[in-house]
Structure formats: structure tokens, C-alpha cells
Length: 171
Image (cartoon, rainbow, N blue to C red; front, side):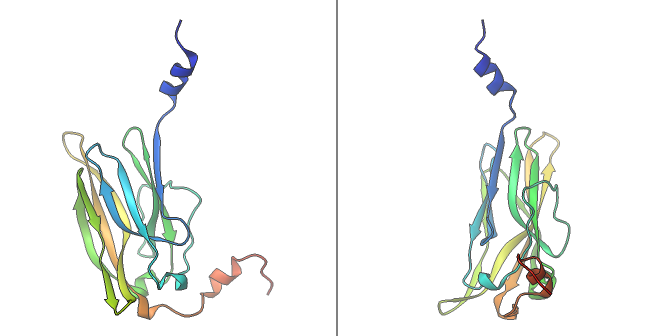
């Protein structure tokens, strides 16, 4: 007689997730030799002025918008990667593309740069998109879109759409 618990565990698909949370941004990515993906998160000192809207879970295969960054990843047992795309309408205004197609393979990692003025971060890199690529042998690699975010250009007050999404909101 087979153990029913073992049978149940074998039929449940494995899912690995990694999220930056509400107060951090993805500045790096690590692909382990076994293919597991981790994103590296940070909270630059100018982050409190950033107003992004993130979904509850990672369901997208790509973040194609120029106003989004990767706020989290979910990797399924079959190796498929899903992204949580956080929207920030002003990202195209306050950032520039640093790398359009930076390739990361198993056993490699990317860590973005921070530009400093004394103890203050003036600009930092963040991951705008991750495209999963499969070669002819079935191996995965990842192409990253990296933005350089310029902190000095961030507005001091939140955009009006952000304030309307806060509860309670009255006109």
C-alpha cells in the first residue's frame, strides 16, 4: 500500500516565489545553477517619493509597458516564470534605459548600480522587465530590461490618481 501523503506531495506542483514588497524595488537578479530565480530588492533613500501600483500576485509573462517594473516573480515546477508588474505612470519621465537586453544565464547574476552624492542616492538601477528565453537544448536564460531611475526628478507630492486610491477618499 502506498503512502497517501507521499502521493499527494508528488501531485502538487512546486512553485517558488520572490517579491520585493510594497516598499522596495528590484535592483538585481540571481539565477542559480539549478535554474531557480531570485530577485534582489532594495529601498533607496529616495524611494518614499515613489508611488507605484502592484497587483496581488505574479501572473504576467512579460512587463512590456515602459511604465512598469518587476515587483516579484513566481517560478513554476516546469521552469515557467510569471512576473508581478508594478505600474508607475511617471517612470518614463524619471528614468532612462540603461540596458535593453542584458542576458543572465544559470550560475550568473546582475546587480544594479547606485549613484551617490555623499550619503544620498541620486540614481539607481531597477529591473523593468524579464524575458525568459529557451535555447535549442531546453535551457533557460533571461533577458533583462534595466532602467536608471533619477531620484532628483521625483515629485514631492503623489500624483492625483494615487491619492484617489487611498481609503478613505472623499472629493
